[in-house]
Length: 106
Image (tube, rainbow, N blue to C red; front, side):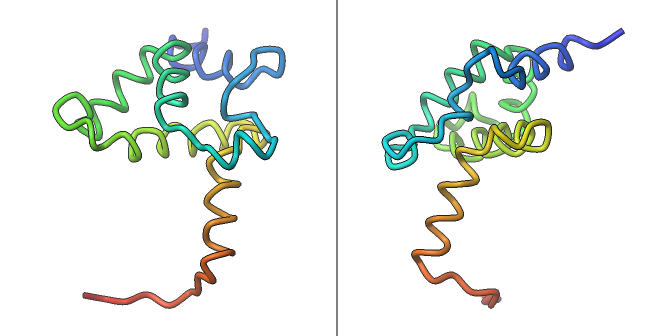
């Protein structure tokens, strides 16, 4: 019997249920809105939202929105490769920014 969390995540991954993470067109990629993704998370996966919010301490520090959204995006991309909007934007930013494999230790 699937858990509540599993049911929420499966619902988002279904093709017939539109997710903002599935959007592939240029306008959606050029205007990545973390608040829209966060709304999708809160609406469609309230249990997952509460857990992830607690993990990144989002309720006390609203500046952690990027951490929360990226965690959600990674989890959903792992479950369904079509839910890759955040990963596509990151790839473009890294490629256009000429990112290398070098790491600077401060």
